[in-house]
Length: 117
Image (tube, rainbow, N blue to C red; front, side, top):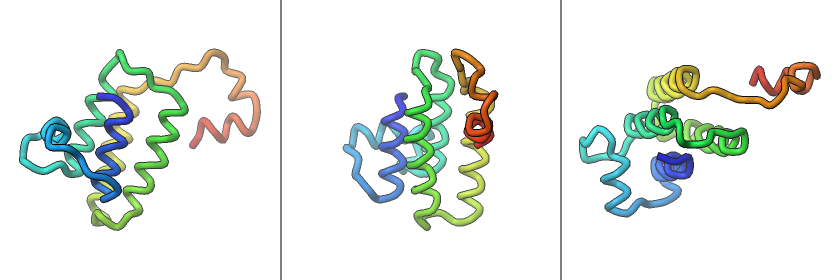
C-alpha cells in the first residue's frame, strides 16, 4: 500500500470521493463487503510494515491533515474516534521509524516542539 491509497480510503470514509469496484475490493482488507474504519486501520498497518515505502515528513503531514479532517467529520462515534486514534498511534510507534540526517532539530526550541508534536 502507498500513502496516497490510505488518503483515498480516508477521503472515501469522509464522503469526499468515491472508489471504483476494484478499489473497494482491494481496500476491503477484512473482506466483510464494506470499506470501513477497520479497513482503514488495516490499510495503514500494511503501509507501515512495508519497508519498501518511503515514509517522509511531507507524507506524514498529508496523512495527519487528512486523518484529523476525517476524525472531526462527525462520521464516527467518540468511541470509534478514540479506537482509530489509538490503533494508528500504536502502529506508528511500532512500525514507522523517523530517520533524521542530523540531530540539529533538538538543539532549537522550534525543533523540539516539532518533534514533540
